[in-house]
Image (tube, rainbow, N blue to C red; front, side, top):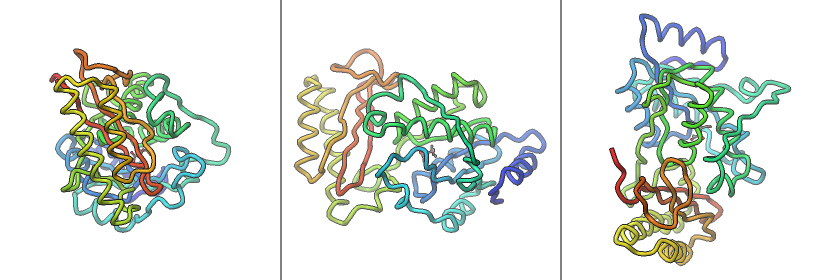
Length: 288
Ligand code: PAF
């Protein structure tokens, strides 16, 4: 596996990887890799001849007072894990490379960026969209893979890619991979390592309470009181704050107060010991 830290190196490495008409998949990450990321790399290897992984802790998607400085950075260990998974290229630019002096452009995706994390983390999705657009332009992949754990992020990136003609215009070009979970159901996240043992135990209530709420809604219970019970369960388990616990249209993210004919998703963000955890799960029939 080759590591590129500058654009010139990246371009040379990509030209070599693509030699003979090889296809290229990109897995964008912020590093601190875990099994969820490695699942993306494995899926990328199934779908393309060559796999590039980017590691860049993107400052523009962190708000004031968020965990930009504390965010775990372990490039050498990440590189070893990627090498073992058979990734071909690691793109690891620094901040100056990504945002040169005078950088003044931002991409804002209306609609799907609004509500949920868009409300509780103002500016977050502009930062995500801008850096992912840059990554697409730098690497020019045939497809890119993202975890479904960040469901709203996936919707924002799909919208942006369609609107700006980024990546090949076929259905699987932005590929979402189902969330990988710990044995107790907690969605894997680089932020789980912030949790004390006590909070880590309490955090497992999140997926459990979500599954219970989904079973009730699918069984015909009213949505609003069911979501209120879900919030109470989280607060009772030791969560300090629930940013949101909502049912939404899986594609448009329009809030729903009842299940309808289109696939729906339960989306939750909640804070425990200052760590913000997010999760989402399908509700009702999801179609093909
Ligand atoms: O999901 C992430 O790790 C980040 O938001 C991403 C997509 C790599 C952009 O910085």
